[in-house]
Amino acid sequence: MPKQDKSKIYTYNVKDELYSPINAITPLLKYIPNNKTIWECCDSPTEGNITKVFRDSGYNVVSTSIHKGDDFLTCKIPDGVDIICSNPPYSKKDEIIARCYAIRKPFALLLPIDSITGVERCKMYKKRPPQFIIFNRRINFINSGNNSQGGSMWLCWNLDLPNQVVFEEYEK
Image 1 (cartoon, rainbow, N blue to C red):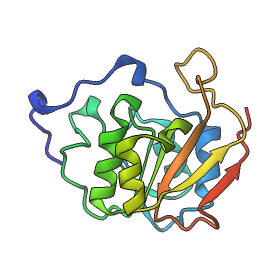
Image 2: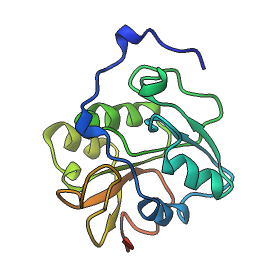
Image 3: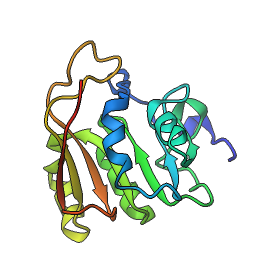
C-alpha cells in the first residue's frame, strides 16, 4: 500500500493511545468466520493485540496505522478486505464511524459505551442500525494506568450477531 503525504494525515491525541487487551478481543472471534480478511485500520505503532489475536486465530489480517503513514480517514481500502476491526482513536470516533459506514464493509469498533449517543452518530445509526457487543465490566486498556473511565463496547455493523445487542463477559 503506498504511503500518504504526511502533511495530510490527521494529528492524534496522545490520550488516544490506549491499546486493546486480549480479553477484550477474544469475545469477538466467535462472531466472525475465520475465512474472512480483517482490516485493523488503526493499529498501534507496532503490531497490536487485535492484529495478533486474529492472526493467531487463523485469520488473514491487513494492518495499517497512522504511525506507519496510513490515515484511515483518507487511505485506499486494501484489496480483499472483508471486515474492519479496530480500537480507533476516540477523539476521531465520529469521523471513523462515518468512514466505516461509507466503506460499506461489516465492521467492529471498540469504543466507549457513550458512543451510542450523539447527534451525528444517531443520524448514521438511523440509516444503518448498528449492533452492539457490550461488556459486563470496564476494560483495563493497556497504557491507561487503570480501568477505562466508563464502559466499553464493540460497535458493529452487518456482523452475524445473534441479536442486535449481545452481552459478553470481560475477564480481567
